Image (cartoon, rainbow, N blue to C red; front, top):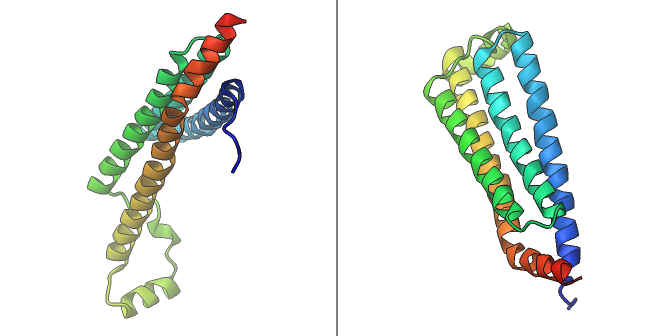
Length: 169
């Protein structure tokens, strides 16, 4: 069994993970917000900006940790919980108000015939497909953001110890 990592190494790793995760969220969500804005999709733009805000919150937490301030951990955990809440609300709204008009043109006549053989209409199939997609998004969100929040929470004591070590030096 390996000995536990020194607190300063835990701090370094947490900061690196937070910076990577925050930049990834900020970049991807910002790009989606821009694409949505370019196509005049207001709700998509708003969701993209809200999600990008979670990345900015996480980057702020990482910057606080690099500056030697332990309250950065609170920002890191909060960013994950905020992102999880935002995504789950988005999924709930999309499941409650499904819009199949954008994907209806993708259905070919052959696919429509296969759907009819299964005993469903094309609209029923597309509604079920959208529900499945959004439930997968919700599941992935719960797993990833929940896992990241737990990751940060489990390292809180090591980060506090690292902050004490750096104060002594």
